[in-house]
Image 1 (cartoon, rainbow, N blue to C red):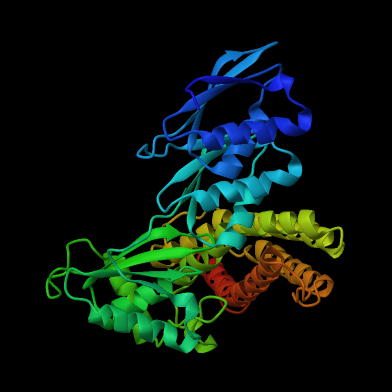
Image 2: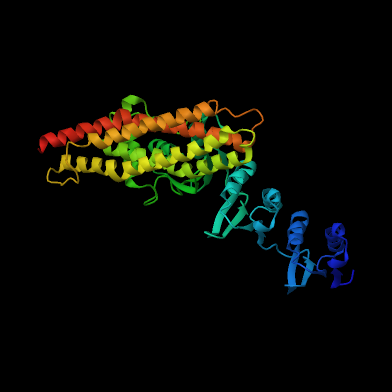
Amino acid sequence: MATLQTLNVTLLEPRLKHPTVFRYFDALAAGENFIIENDHDPKPLYYELLAERGNIFTWEYLEKGPEWFVVQIAKNPAEETRHIETLDVTQLEPRMKHPTVFKYFDALSAGEAFIIENDHDPKPLYYELLAERGNIFTWEYTEQGPEWFKVKISKNPVEKEMETLDVTQLEPRMKHPTVFKYFDALLAGEAFVIENDHDPKPLYYELLAERGNIFTWEYLEQGPEWFKVKIAKNPDEKTPQNGSIPEKDLKKAAYLKEKGVTFGCSDSGTKFPDNKDYDEWELGMLADYIVQTHHRYIKDNAESLNGLAIKVAEHHGENHPELHRVATSTHHFLQDLLNHITNEEEVLFPVIRQLLIKKDIPTEELSYDAGTLDHPIRILLKEHEIAGEDLNFLRRITNNFAPPKNACNSFTYLYEKLKEFENDLYIHLRIENDYLFPRALNLDEEIAATHS
């Protein structure tokens, strides 16, 4: 075929237009090109060509309307490096949007990327891609509304330089022993990566308590749904790196070990100390622990869980109408819970810290009247009851979080995340109801009686 051959698409029968263009394109050798002419913008052809042939061509407008369009289509030279392609999702039929994005993604090699453009936030696509392809991509907003959204989607490069341990594939009782085995096998200066579906911070303290300050702990990915940590053995095990482990963490690890804290992990998240241990925890440390562990879990997972509930309802609500109630109830439940933990962090926990300082330094001023802490705590306890009722309602309408037999991955994943969320929240509320709140009230009464 001669270079720059011109095809006037208006002269073809409608059913033959796209097949003829494809025939012209397939006949090109690498580096050759041809021209198409049309009486309207042939951009839909661009997306079809990209979806069917991949990123092996360039598309250049020589004339762009309004009445006549001329486009030069060239087949890339074989040695040409692939550039980041952009997909305008608004130009696709609704039923083709997600399948086309998946085709783009599947065509990527590790380390490559493309960009999608849309007139609304494409976050539901993020959850579908995660459910269907797993955690093998990065999602980066380059423009985020309000009228136009651009997202760069990259396929993760293959990690070859160090071994990776997916902790979720291990039996719960084998998780921490296996990580220790990996760590002990390292030579000084070597490292490995662990992957987990929740923050493995309890492992950090166990490793610190059992092996000492001979390692570094670096988050490569930090939630909300997947965590990756690079654990490296210090170049000289006998000489810890300056500042590699904060002094407060060393003290906390020693304290937890002394008190017999269990650091292990269960299927749904962190396994916490038995009831007897909480009474021995310093009150401020207990409040910090709740914020860093349970509040952090809520903040890291609320948005993704809400989006997942909406997405599953959109896709399957016609056949499973209860999913619309699940999505609505989940949204209100999470909003109430986020407001609740904000009140704890901005009101109650600062007051607890003031009381602790006041106990040691009697001249310290309080921002509230000592002896009145029972009122906000009663409100928080009532909110705990409401949260429990919300979870019971979700359990009832989801058949105890049991998806139907024909449920897709996203449907099943939603119910698994709701069950995980419930498990963490009940542990969280028990610690506050049985330990934090009573001890805070006792301290408040003690300060009120001493300084009245």
